[in-house]
Image (cartoon, rainbow, N blue to C red):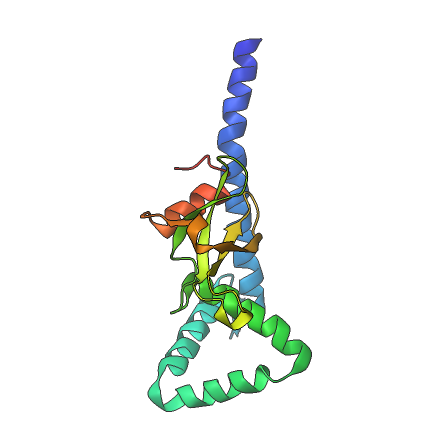
Length: 184
């Protein structure tokens, strides 16, 4: 009976992450594909055409945003959106989050170990702002502490003396933190 339970557990540990990963990618593919349902003459809607069209559209917009001639137009649009009271909050937050991971100003590129007040306790995080002078906190830095098994975290402020930079890869550290210390 113990052997049977062991096989069941091993199968579960292998299949659940695999099936969940496939499902999430399938779900994203179907959702993105449904954004642009482009019917082809005489054939109808072909699965994947909307997905490929969305990818091509994103590449084209990325080219236009990066192009010298059209960049000013997109900056103007960005400034306009940032002036709309409620829209600014959501738009700015999403933009900042995406920039933190894939933008030119990646924010999670300075992994640190922070000593807490408690005896021997430390947390791992990323310095997001090295100067808090504008808040009257000359000797403090802000550190983002991601949560394990979650896409959330907390922004905490620590004295510089409690923050120790780590010489490790940011992506590896993020994986380590989000996995709850399981992945190395």
